[in-house]
Amino acid sequence: MEHMKPLIEALRTKLKQALILWAEGFREACCLHRVIVLCRRSKKLMIRTGQCFLLNGFIFLGSLFVLNSVVIPTLQWILPDHYSQTNCEAMSEFHGVFKFYSFLRGFLIQLFYVFWFYPLYVFSFILSNLWYNDIATHGFAAMGRSGPSTVESSKQNDTLTSDSKVHAARPAGLGGIMIGIGEQVYSLLLLTFFFFEVYAAGFIPYVGKALNFVLLSWMYAYYCFEYKWNFTEWGLEKRLDFFETNWAFFAGFGSPCVLAIFFFSPLVGYGFMAVLFPLFVLTATGTEAEQVISTQRRRFTGAQLGKVPVFYAADTLLIRVLSLLPSESQERAQDNKTL
Image (cartoon, rainbow, N blue to C red):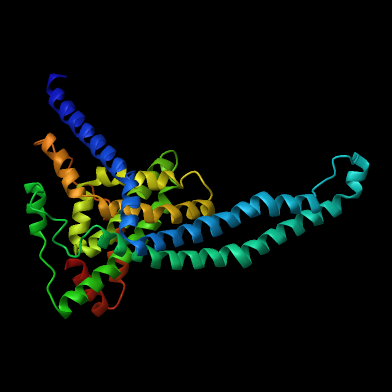
C-alpha cells in the first residue's frame, strides 16, 4: 500500500482542484448583479433584455400557465371523464359519451398546441437567438471593450499566455473573413453533433441522467462564452483548447443554467432557459475566466488537471460525415477546422 500513497495523494489533489474550479465557475455564473450593472450602463441592453423577458417569460410561460391552470381545467369541467354522482349502471350506459368527451378534450388541447404553442416556440426561438447576439454586443460594449486585446491582459498567468501564443493569429483582409466564416460554420455543426451526443447520453442506463447533466452544463457554458470569444476574435482551435483544458470551471459555470431547466418538461424548460440564458451570457461577458483560472492554478503548482476531450466524439463524427462529401468540399471543411 505504501507505493499507492503518492498516487492517492495526487488524485486527491486533482479532485480538490477540480472541485474548487467547479465552484469558481458556479460562483461566476451566479454573479447576476453584473446584469444590473451592465443594464444601467446601456439603455439598448436594458431594452433587449426586457424584450426577452416579455416574449419568453410573460407570453410563452404565461401561455403555458393559462393552458394548465385555466384551459385544461375548464375543458375537464365541460367535458368530464365521469360524473361523481353517477352509479355503476349509469356509468356503463354513458361510457361511450365519456370516451367521446375525452377524445374531444384531447383534440382541443392539441389544437391549442398546433396553432399557438408550436408557432410561438418557433417564433420565440428565432427571435430570441437574434436578440441574444444583440444582448452580447451591447453587454460587451457596456463593459468598455471594443477589441480582442482587453481580455488577454498582461496580468494573466504565464502558462495561459504561452498557450495562447501557440495558436496562430487570424490573417487580416478577405482571407481572415473567410476563415472566420468557415470556423463559425464548423462550430455550428460541431455543437449540433454535440447536442445529439447529449441527447443520446440521456438513454444510457443508470448513469445517463448524470452524464446528461454534465454534458448539458458544458454545452450551455460554451454557448454563453462563445459570444465573448467571437468579439475577442478567438479562433475555434483556441476556444476548444481553452475549454477542454479548463473543463471543471466550465462544468461549474454551466450548472446553474441546467439546474433551471433539468426538472421541467421540455416546453417549460425552454421557456425558463430562454429567459435566463441572456443573463448567463452577460455574466460570461463580465467574467475574466482566464484570470480566475490562473489564480487557482497558482495554488496547485505542478498538479494540473489535464485536458478532457469534451468534443472528441462530436468532432470525430463530424469529420466522418464531412468525409462523405465531395473531395473539394471536404478539403475546404478540413482547412477551416485546421485554420
